[in-house]
Length: 288
Image (tube, rainbow, N blue to C red; front, side, top):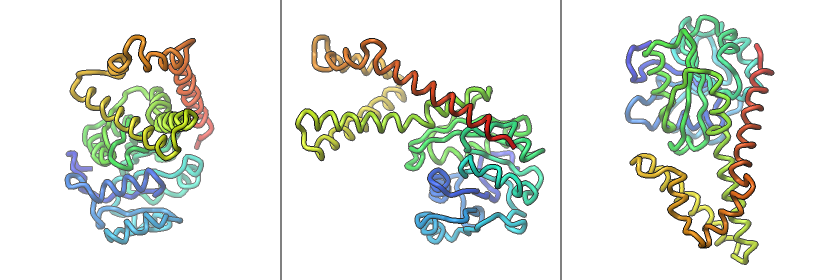
């Protein structure tokens, strides 16, 4: 592995679903630390039309499985399949890989111990991205095993994964299930909020198209405002909420409902807790 952050070797992407395709798109469009047709191979037995078009446009090889020959020059492997098929690929993939190849897994619930048993002796990084990464607005959190603690491995993994957005490291694996519950599953919570806001507008008499447009613009604008406040360290979510909530006003009336008796904060707390428990359950059932 190169002892620097630039991507210089060959990468095998195992699985080109939503997140895998987002990563491949990011690698191929990145000006700094990106990949080329010569340094990327996509492994997917049933690639989507979008992935096939991406591969054709850039001249990237798409194979139904990683052969020993194709794996000869691979020094980084990104596992992006569904967790349920991990056992299938883990049975045959390790024997094809060069010793010391870095394994980067974005499989929800698959822990470092399980990955280590499947890929003994390999440096391994376990990471959790999220779906906004498809447009470069995501966030990924990673943790490495002992063999990948060296800065060259972490730098190589971070360079690959940062094409979808921000990146953070944690040092305790138990945090990964909470990360999954907050940022991995979190976009769905926001989408539900937007959906509910649009339907509520309809219930108050707004035309459906206008209600949808207002809800989407509001959620997107509020997110951008929050991001700017966080970036400039000028305002956090609580401060922005207080700014828009005038005492005795319309927003205050809505906040009284959303926050009364635990309300939305408690509902979100329970939702995140349920997602975290499910992540641990998945991890416990995905033994290799």
